[in-house]
Length: 42
Length: 501
Image (cartoon, rainbow over all chains, first blue to last red; front, side, top):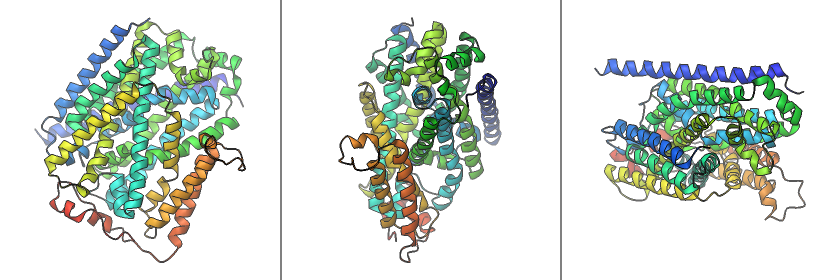
């Protein structure tokens, strides 16, 4: 079964969206870790 | 056309900034050899996820998945690549806490192999692990040299020297801590650069509908879901990647670097989720390159990604892709420099009597040697594919028997060594490159699928069967007593060993 046009678009744009979500998660988590460290060692 | 001088100048500037940042961060944080190679319990979720993603995603994602998509089964093969990469990291979310529980003061997989199984399995695991990591490193250097040569005609030796030299500057000085903090920044650049590279390329090609039509017109089989060749490739590549990564010291280091077990599980799982779309997006470039008619010779498939971007993107975007590729290499190279150095350093106390400062100096010296070797090999332009596959096969025959000892009291050195050796013999008997040198024409046709799956299945089965022979019982609590910190005075006297059966 050949991947349809819609299926291909969903896979590609879905993958891009997932990478973007991971990027946002990364930034938020690093920021939170950094703040916690800063609070613990003023 | 991007000029050699402009690209090389930009890359030197970027890499020097990273070297300075890594060295600055590590300043005052490396007091013992433990800090240099383990960074035990020091890393929170954000940094740990970032370092796992960055270390896992080398420049290979711009070569191998696209090659698989172009030449080994299209989109199905790419999915196999993504699944294998993710499963390897997800496996550490399960095995990692077990490692920390049984060996809370441990450092490396070879140290575990010695304590659990003794010198024979230790020697074998050391050989397989270092061979895999060094071939990985050499492949990264070779890949980036060929990519920059294609993009801007940069001589291979200049690329290898710049990357190797700058990574050595901060990894040699700051060890694992410098590697992990630079990984965090590199991930924050790699992810958006990958998104931008893919989106700009898609737009330049007219959007996903136009790309789909291009591939379907030229090679519709590359977009066939469940294509037999793709399924076969996907199956063996999963075994190959999972096996090799379980013997990758970089992950064992990060298991110990995690601040706690919850952070460890969460970070490896998030990283596993992250690598799936990354590998998939890079892999799609393979069918696209075929659709555009850019893959004219078999050797072109491995550079499909770069053939597409140099064909359709303007120079500034090509430069951004080059920076992405270099960041991918650097984030893996610093990890592997330190991982190989740590394996050697942890084993030194059994051979020579060194103080803590002496061990740290030895770790730095090994890092220099590894960096020099990787730079020289990377500048030669060798094809390392066969070596890579051989290292993967060795690992496929080894990883289950090795890790079985974390869960079974009945696993024993002779049994797991026999299981690994037999699995390797079966794997080699069906390993296509081996058929050229071994007189095995009476056997069924060689294939990577039978080779890798056979090695894994046979070694797993024999490890379970041999554990049932006799009435041996190993007290797993002994691992905690036998494996000690390197800055613990009693560690050297104990020699990490004893009776392993």
